[in-house]
Length: 633
Image (cartoon, rainbow, N blue to C red; front, side, top):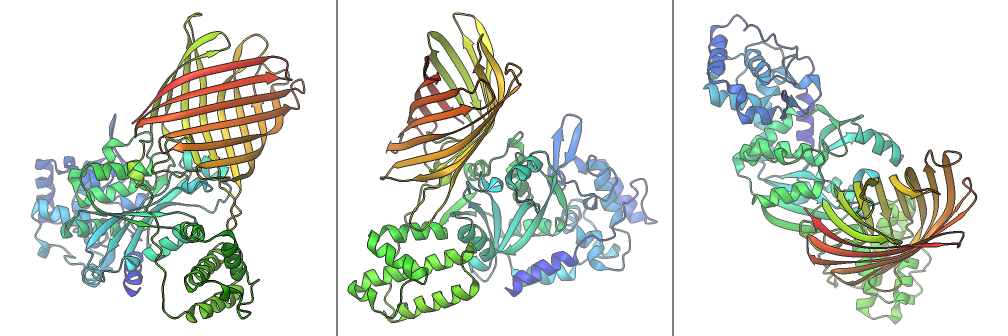
């Protein structure tokens, strides 16, 4: 703990508080400075890849631009877009005097200086500051040994975490994973409304910062509070590479970049730290329009950087597994005990075997911790109930029950995030072909191997249609967002399910198909009636806009009743009925019945068959049958 505090305090003290931009036109009155500048210009040192990595430069059409937006990070006024100006300004700043050691370039930008010292063979005795004593003491204190890439899986009910998240941990000489340092990049925001967060995140209206916290605190945040399992990927870095990463992390303290949900997000910015450690990786070159966290980990594994994998189940995963080992009656006893509704002194549990009593008490203690973490009980109630449960547990001696939590499929073994599809089908008597592209990420009928089973997250799905008999080509639909979160209600978790779908879609009017904007929102509940099945009922509102509506808009209310069934691991089915009563446009009733199934041939290939029937006021039924081939990449 003291080591964690020392690292945070050092980084805070090392903030750049008063760095003036260095004039790139001249050196201070120092001949040696001019010699180094000349040497750097002769070798065009600013073109070296490592310099670009240290400054987070990316190649653009008209030159290089750093993804870092904080002016404090640059010593030249042109530094964000001019690698040459920034390098020369950095060299010249080495010869400026300062009252505080930690504000000097040698210490403030210690990774830059370490590289320049090696490339230019700098004589440290000629600098005002040559050694950063605090940094040396820091490295002696923590002795960083290894780096882990951490993946808390997606939290479907949190807009900020729908794709999952990545962070790094640095393990030190104490060999305790829980006390390692967690390096996190995230947007700084007080917004709690999901739609506001999504809008600002998409358009880069938040500032993102790196932070350092003890890893056990992040485990509590993600695993205990957010229902998220955690995967740990140990990286194959040398001692020298780990130290380079730490040096650059010090440079990034209190430096912001504009946070973009789709590309310059948590996972993308962490890749720069890995590249600083080992510049040959070139990880950031492969991500442009969007960056999905699990895809960055796949890239890291593909280049052979992962040497060990560890799984850490969340609090909810532990509770679900522990409860599954008990029948309904014993689960009820455990819940009563956790809620303080069972008198621990009346001997109710004596009728069960010793092992069953241990399992009931263990489940109750886990559930008490969950209730407290979610703010369901006060701290006083938590202490009282937990103390009572511990007392019962102590009466059963030190005997333990092994809980071998099943390890789910590694997220890296699931299908790729992007999907292209070719469909052929009939709408009534009209034949058509659809070409569809889905940049991200996962749909219910897709194989849930490595994914959250009850979640659907789709961004930017685009579909174009061609009617061969009419020789007609049209833009069919664009799903800006299509999220469905089915959180089944159980004895221990009273979760709610919801959906949010918005985009452009072709709708039938009296004369023909026309493009309309839609926004569908829904909320309700879901349950698992038997293994592999998920039934749900959602109340919905449907808002549509089109110039072909008499009043331009149409507003409807209704709901959807459906069921998903996993037949086997590679075969899933979906049945649903959706009924919407429109209040504006002719006050009509729209009913849709549908069935679909998808079969995966391999992890990244699948075939889907869907059938749907539509009717207005039960007058005429229009039927649609289509077959599609999916390729994930």
